[in-house]
Length: 416
Image (cartoon, rainbow, N blue to C red; front, top):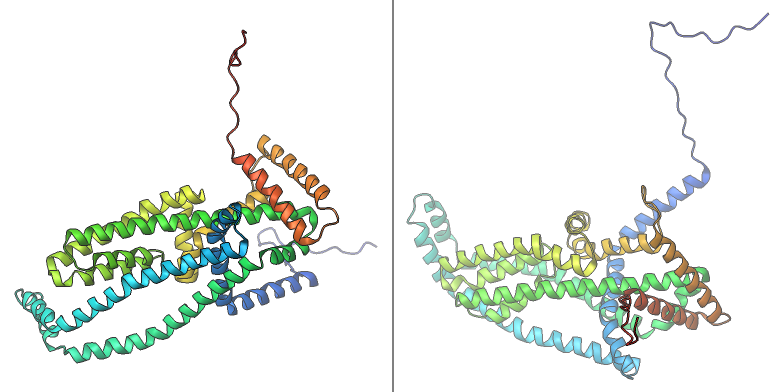
């Protein structure tokens, strides 16, 4: 007698719900735990990671100058000494030209603060809408302002000391990386399979190019900011225009906070000139900040880093939201590096079709790897790394050099 089968649900009722069981494999669980542990360690070591990234940016910035000196038969150690000495001299010149002038202006403002506050209170008292603000200014004592400023300065000084310590750590780490370049590069190549050495060397060269483009973009935008502030303050007869403009140019390196520092320094310097000049400086500085962020930055970095304007704006916003000022500062080189890695590692994106250029690039990769295997056979890691970099440099020059134009018929002087 046949056994009764499962009873089907009545047609007027909903079918039984299906139960989906997710049973991850032990390997998946271990990989997920390792990923979470890595993210936790990375979060704890974030200052160290930022110091390392800053050191690599410094290395990428000064490497072309060191290489330029080496090409002119200057020893590497002496070239590094010259470049770091020049950077130290520029830093000393900047501090000498800006800090004393800024301190002098701050001291003059503190001395003139009662007179300026009384003058501003009298102007505000002329209107019924601003009369309460005028009364508030008259009740404020100079000693209270100084106490608040001192308390904030003490709390802010600890952060300044910490940031200065991180900056010095990055500089010395960059110096050690430059000195031990061959040994560190050999160690990196020794842990990577030889079949990937050419691609690794190209990635390193492209990263150096990205850093150089990013620094050039920073120099251009900072120079524009410094020139604009100098012209504006000189036109308004504001004292200390040179020092304020240099400070604004350096502060422009910091996303978001740099603009506030530049506007604040220019407005404070214009206080002795009266409220009309202050208003003019504020309006023009804010207008330039908006123009720089919407027009200058996308165009300059788009050309230097070969990034679309939309990617630049999105990267700055995402970096600022995720990691604040450090994130916004590193957003553009990280975005350019990600796009470069996608191209160098031949990552196939969804919807992308293979083109003739991709086939030609793959053939060049194969030829480069064959040449590297032939030349680096039996050599230690340091020498093999140098050969891989040499092959990658030659290929980069070949790709960037303009293609020869076909000669016109009869251009050799012979009749057709």
